[in-house]
Image (tube, rainbow over all chains, first blue to last red; front, side, top):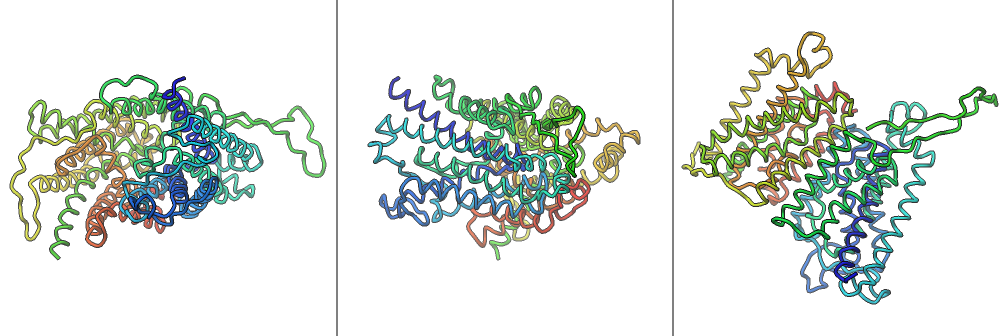
Length: 344
Length: 296
């Protein structure tokens, strides 16, 4: 493989890994719990900005070409960890503000609007995060260990891919742990019917806020990994339609199934959005991105019609029947309870 | 003071455009119970169809507006018949429908980009002489925009309150099943709702293009969020609420630019929306939102 092929391939892999982690975070919300977070991209944004200001150093560095608050140069992986925590705190804030009172579409719209408020505020205020120009020259992590940076060393690019893959694996186990535990059952109970879940003693509001926190942390972690790979971050990197790329990944792959969501992330943000870098360009420069978005729209509608459960559907879960109270064993043929996941 | 008056003038023009679009958006939601995110893309499409008629074919801009508006209405009915109704018949959930209209929005908006390109266009119209009313100065197109909006609002009011179709639309919005039992052909009412909202989207899109001067394929979606904000502020599903919300959003966004940088006007609009929804989740006029259990 030539260096330029490695360059493109590693970029594709990093983007896919980042999208995968973000999609898992969003799927915990929309897939497992039915919290329709149309402003999810805000988590990626906060993760990226926190990582950027914690690795750039004070804003007088680089000749003061950009302005931002609280610059520090902390060693890897501190910025990623702080970014993840910041995503969780933001999730808690959004959850407390919206999920306690608002239901359904209002909640979705308010989250979308929060992402927009942040977008316009960050764009307008140049002293906060350098406004609509955004931050650049964000240093790549662990360059000293590898002996080179993303633009000089192909080894560095593979090491970064490996780190992303490792974090993906970690995130996968966290998500699977949550969804297969009793907690996951409670989340799905809230999704199917929150009144019933509450009548069984589950605090639906708390559970929804919880997925907002965990999903927010994952989204911010994805943003952190992305920004140190790209080296720049501006409001144009997190416009609200970006959230719908993740929606498409979840719908195509299969909601409420971590493997399905991973597959969706490989197909939609990976192959469809980033894979074209391997193809020769056709027509004017705007044509390919425009057609990509049209294709994503067609895929969403096509999957919603022909295979609403996605490529890898949610698992049909079987639970051993509970023993009746008073130590009486349940008799008869029914030993297992089938739980059918809800369709679309 | 003069700045305040100038801002009020701009605010009124914006309010007029927002009102046309917000009423279209909200009527469609109340009649068909689908939150149509694709509305913004229809606005963009209409602006570009009118551009082709006006600049390429050479038609008068008002004729172009009328044709583009009716074409948007027809397209909306086709979308309803071809995509929305089949999904509804299958029992797709409310949120499933939102996702589908988002997908439609992506398809239409980026098809417009693929066809017309990402450049900014402008209509082939003479600027006309500015008109001064008291201490307010309006361009020719701003006045026409306000005029069309006022006529449109009166028309919607008469349609809803004085015609059989309007009555049937209100009934369907209240309770679609009961309306059907009473002999209202609700599928036709749904078509009418989509046609009306599509037409209003078309009118709003072209007028937006006219008053902005130049526009690109994102013009509709850029304003869609403000339109949704106006709709929700007034109380979703309420035609009069949408008008009220449009006036509030139109004026406040302009006034705020007197106090803080103009870059924050959207922030102000959205913060107002969030605040209103948190205090009064059903919006200012609550009927539909309360009926459909959308806020606790």
